[in-house]
View 1 (tube, protein in one colour):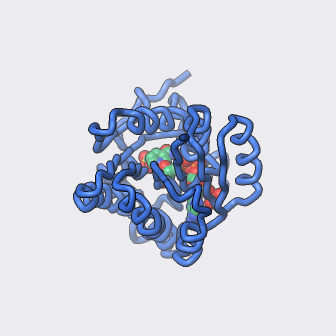
View 2: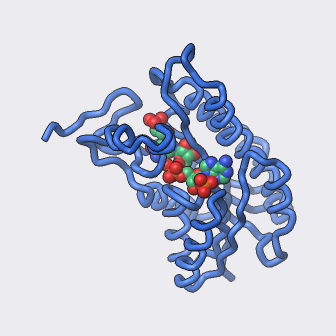
Length: 253
Ligand code: NDP
Ligand code: 8X3
């Protein structure tokens, strides 16, 4: 029987690439996100990979929407083997004294509270079966802070703490927890951070070959398909041209 993966934020970037990677390898896929048009299109594309696809249209910040979506899963979709807590974003880039509190709320509500709501809804299904694998998509911003990154970095530090805490709390239930901490990756991330400013978003990756969604999808697939007694706890992945949040070497040509 095919295994099932649920991916939050599958309408773009890492989540979308992960959906393709697992569908191409015979997993049934639950895709989620806020943009219904994108979910519908992705569902059609994934079904052509000859797997089952279910799309759930909800905002991870809305606790009752999250609870309802998981509670109303048809029985054949309740055996979730892998949860990828990927939905997340950075909004804005400014010193703490110049920060926009609405941006702060969006980041904390999505990256921390949204991840918690989804986890709380899905974990009982894994506990009941004494098996499961949770991936939390953190960031190098969860390992260190950089100037202007303050609240985004704090939200990803929280994800790091939650990955460690989940691993401890779920130990008795045979559930693996893997924290993934990517560096610079060219997705819609910077476009969202800079509120649609394409020029500013493109400048982030100038002179660098950044990670792509499929690089992260490959890493998740590798961790997920190791023998069941093996759990990769934490994976930091950067482009070769990036050493950490501050040190990036850029081609000048
Ligand atoms: P994208 O912007 O390309 O994708 C983000 C995804 O998250 C979209 O599918 C979006 O879907 C979804 N999402 C955002 N907010 C919500 C919400 N409130 N409810 C439901 N879904 C939501 O970015 P990435 O793929 O790059 O980002 C994925 C994760 O990786 C994030 O957690 C990000 O912080 C992290 N990350 C990104 C890095 C990068 O450089 N790109 C590096 C390190 C970590 P929709 O808008 O349809 O809801
Ligand atoms: C995204 C990477 O460097 O903008 O998490 O924090 S960074």
